[in-house]
Image (tube, rainbow over all chains, first blue to last red; front, top):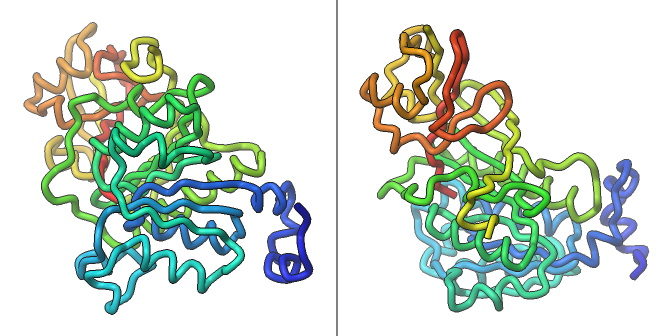
Length: 241
Length: 79
């Protein structure tokens, strides 16, 4: 699979980046689960970068309260199916990217089908319970999982890929719960979603050094980025079995 | 002994920092776990997802030593 003249023109600015491998990117398939604040941003940048195929999964419709951060949508999107609106916008940005829109939330019943043939998973979810399910599926299928989450002024990014790394369940308690209302300033999922997309691009292209085995903690109020090492939990209920 | 607990994000409101915006000085006994120390100072350990110190994530059963800085992190769930 070579690059056409149009590809060389479109991706001109990134083709000369050290270790950049556009052909590898073009042959990759990315699953984004949840096309909200995080997923909107990851999807936009991966589309712009020229990833080959993307599967978008989300069972929600667009609400007005999404518009402070879910930048794929506009006022006219309200009430419409998110993944369909997202696909329209992304195709208009880069028609060469093959986009599959799945208007479903992830669950035990469709997890196998959703993750089938994917090279990497990006977490765009909005609750801990679904993240545990996605993490479990990623571990089971041995697909790298780019974790992201935001709340208040703070966000997390990680790359989980057992057995080389820990998994999400190695660090979060199994009884962790999502509060009824999660406060989110619109800019924060923007920052975290871009970091997730960056990690996915690096992993796909084999660029050192990723967040594998580490967690990035961004505190936008205090303006700090802490990166901490995560060891596998030998008693993890998910990845040690 | 003394340890310094730093609160990530909204845990700040529960930790009641006294040194700076994020940090609380805590006098405690050698050999106690972070979970026990949190209970001693009236912070429900259930609000803490994990901690980290010296660049590594640890569980709540971690036993700190004198003068150590520990950062507490809440479960962050939105997207």
